[in-house]
Image 1: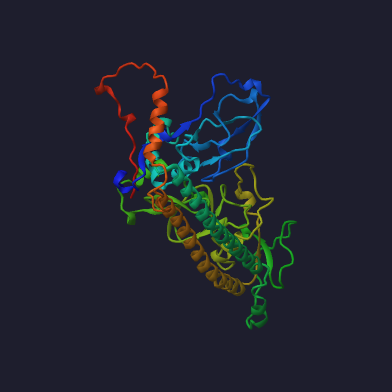
Image 2: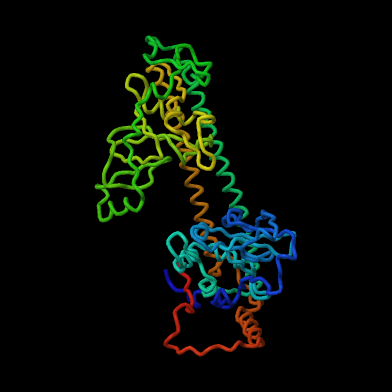
Length: 479
C-alpha cells in the first residue's frame, strides 16, 4: 500500500480531504420533532449493502423517538459501526413523507458540496476496498463495538477531478455496473436453478424413481431390513415395493453425549503457537467453525444441525459428512449409521431432503431437539438398492458440482472486475479528460473563498507540541 501521490493523477485533478468536498448533515437547532405526528425512521437492518437507492422506512410517532440521527432526503447513509461498516452498508433514500428522516444513531449522513463534488462520486469512492480497509483501521471503541468517527472520515484523502469529469465517471460507472449486475443476476439465477435440480434428484432418489430400472433388472434377492417399521401418522407413504419406513433412532447411533462445546477464546488460546498438523477441525451446525488442538471422534460421521441450521430453506443442506479426527460442539447432532441397516452417505443425503416442518421448536432460532429428531421417519430399501441410490445421486451431483464451481468462479471474477473498474475510476483511467473542464484547483478556490467569507470562530490557542495526530490526513492505499 502506498500514499496517494499528486503526480500519479491527471493534471486537472487534486488531492483533498473528504471533509472539504462533503458535509455531514446535522439537525437544525430550531427543528422540533414534536411538530410532526410521525416521522420516517430507518433502522440499520433496512440499509442495504453497497446499493445506490432504497425506499424502505418505518413511520414512528415522535413519542417513540428516544434517539436517532437526523438526515435529509438524498443523504448518503453510511453505517459507522462494526460489522455493518465493513460489510459495506450504505445507501441513499430520496422519497420521504416529511422534509427529513431519523436513522439509527450508528450512521453518518453525508451530502456533497454544491458545485464542488458529485454525491454519487463520493458514494462510489467509499466502496473502494482499500478505502474501507483504511477507515476500518481508524475505527475506535471496544471489540465488537468499533465505530468510525466523523473526524476520521473528514480527514480521509480523496482524489478530486473537475466536477464535469466526476459526473462523467459516475455515468460510466452506472453503465458498466448495470451490465455487470445483469450478468451477476443471471449467474445467481443459474445457481438457484442448479440447486433446484439437485433437490429434484434427491427427492426422486428417496421416492425410488432413480432406481426403478435397477430394481427391474436386479437378479439378486432384495431381503427385507431387520429393523422395526414405523407406523405413526408421520411415517412415509407410497414407498416402492420392498421398501419400509423406520425412524432415525432405529437406523443410526446417536452420539450427542460425546460432544463438548469450547468457546472461541479458549480455542484460540489452545491453538496459539501450534502448527497446522497439530490441529483438528472443530464443527458446528453447518460446517467447520474453527480449529482445536485435540479430537473427540476419529471416524466417518453424519452431522445434523441442532440449532442454527437452515432447516426450512429447501435450497440449503442441514446435514453433512465428516471423516477422520474431529471435534463437534453442541450445535450439531452426531450420527453414525447402523451397520447392516444403512450407510452414512445414504443417511446424509436423505436428511438433506427431509421436510423439517413440524419437527422444530423456537421462533427466532429454530431447534431440532434430540427427542424429536429420533422420530424422523426414514425410508429404507434393501442395502444393495441403498448402495445403488447413493451411486446414482453422486453420479448426477458430480455434474452439478462442476457447473457450480464454474458459476462460483464467474461470480468471483465479476466482483474482481467491479473493484478493478472502481480503481480505474478514481485514478483517472476510466473516462478521458476534457481540457475544457474547469480544473479541480478552481473548485478548491471556491471552497476557500466561501470559508474566507465566513466569520471565523475564536479558538483557544494550543501549543504546537500539544497537537494530536487526529488532525493528520489519511493516505489512500493504492496497491
